[in-house]
Image 1 (cartoon, helix red, strand yellow):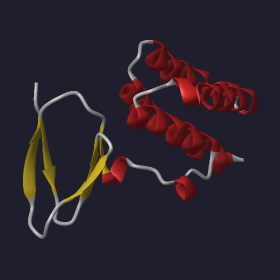
Image 2 (spheres, helix red, strand yellow; image 1 turned 90 degrees about the horizontal axis):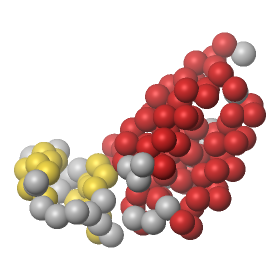
Image 3 (tube, helix red, strand yellow; image 1 turned 30 degrees about the vertical axis):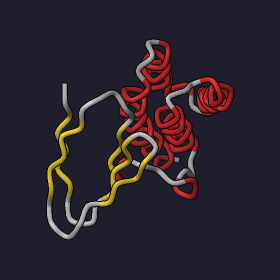
Length: 127
């Protein structure tokens, strides 16, 4: 099944190992095949990973784009354990993320981490 992506002018998207930048006009791509795809707005840079939840997101992003959990497994587990120790109330979020990883769906884990980032923000604003 093909994925249809509409890009704004000058928007970037990662397709596999390549970064594709759109031209000056809006365009639509039809991507066929099984490669990791991330829109520019969903990509987190190293400097943006400035909280524990964002560091989890960043590691998951590396897993997804590399198409290999192995090299990042230890960092992921350490971050999950540290978050759980610091905020046990985040267990439902962390459990969902971990379940997606165990099921082999890193992209769903990334999406689930967005709610962890929001939850972390709530916790930090209430302290």
